[in-house]
Length: 124
Image (cartoon, rainbow, N blue to C red; front, side):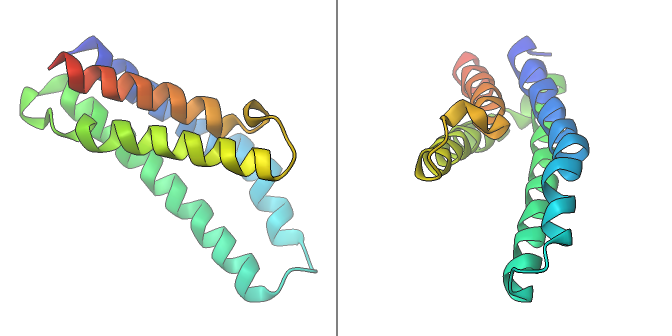
């Protein structure tokens, strides 16, 4: 077991929980309650919400697999940089919206997961 991959898995799991439970209440529910958005925009945003949920679960599982079995050492090579890209995207969207990048939890949570994932990949 590699501790960095285990920590990346834990970070992805925490991000999944924040996204699903806190974000679901604060972001997804108001999105669904909005009556001003065109239906296609509203439901595609909700679909993207669930894509993120699935991706976070996959990241947690992939990093856990790496932590438990060296045969899965390639997973952090994919999911680590992906999480860092998503942190950058989150920061860019926050800036475009006129907010501080760390105002969106996705910026720091994906950065942490990605940093641990890349560190895990480099350690192997």
